[in-house]
Length: 284
Ligand SMILES: Nc1ncnc2c1ncn2[C@@H]1O[C@H](COP(=O)(O)OP(=O)(O)OP(=O)(O)O)[C@@H](O)[C@H]1O
Image 1 (spheres, rainbow, N blue to C red):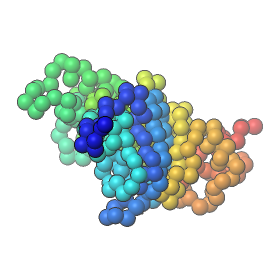
Image 2 (image 1 turned 30 degrees about the vertical axis):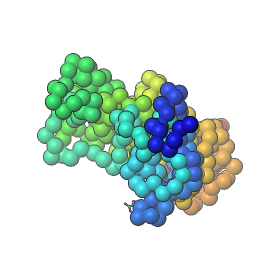
Image 3 (image 1 turned 135 degrees about the horizontal axis):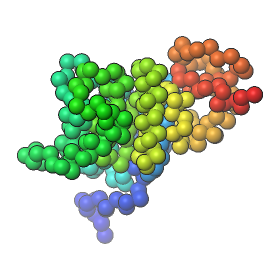
Image 4 (image 1 turned 45 degrees about the vertical axis):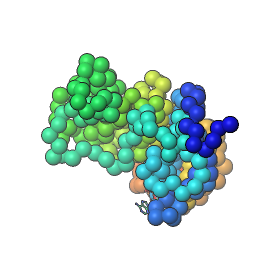
């Protein structure tokens, strides 16, 4: 008989990376997202979409233990979150985060921080750590800038440094909150390329985004939040059908000002992100 004091059974290695069942998260006992069922498995790249304020950040921070867990079940790599200690196995790149212009550190020095949780404080970085750091910098396409000061990089390049820092922890899952937001089109394109490279290498990702069109070749599943509830969870093709079926009022979102698309009037993605109309309706 296992009593309640028994240690949690070892998680099976094929357990989902993230499992939420009826999960609620919020602030000061007030739920912002509730009743969320969500599973992220190895090899998946899940885009989390939704209008401003629908609770995307609250949800991803909640599953990481950074917002209040107000109900339901949260498991990370098969372990209930309260008992989960292998924090380095989930890398997190927070929203609107870039490196301060006042930081006097090189790309390599910043990315090396991602290795710190992997060794005791008294042990200096070894050759293996340096290899992982160099590999992470290569993976985000900054190999030729490794010894530059981060303050000299663009916002998009700094975002890539932060992704590399998360990668240096060798996570099983990379959670990113709007990695392509607030950077110029060229950087957005470069970041989408980085995510495509990571996905091709088997990195599992949960990505909050408004720029679905930038990531659409990478994403294997789409989850939409609306007012704190999941209102779509399925494959990108099913999402397109869902959008085309007119499930959403295209006028209800808070759209960015994007170029005026000519052609048939089609709904955009949920929230402010454009869903390239050319992708929704076959070009003719
Ligand atoms: N620290 C906080 N304390 C109290 N309420 C908060 C806090 N952070 C966010 N909220 C509230 O939670 C709700 C959801 O916010 P959240 O940032 O999760 O949405 P989001 O979908 O990520 O939005 P966006 O697309 O604008 O980033 C909002 O009503 C917001 O005001």
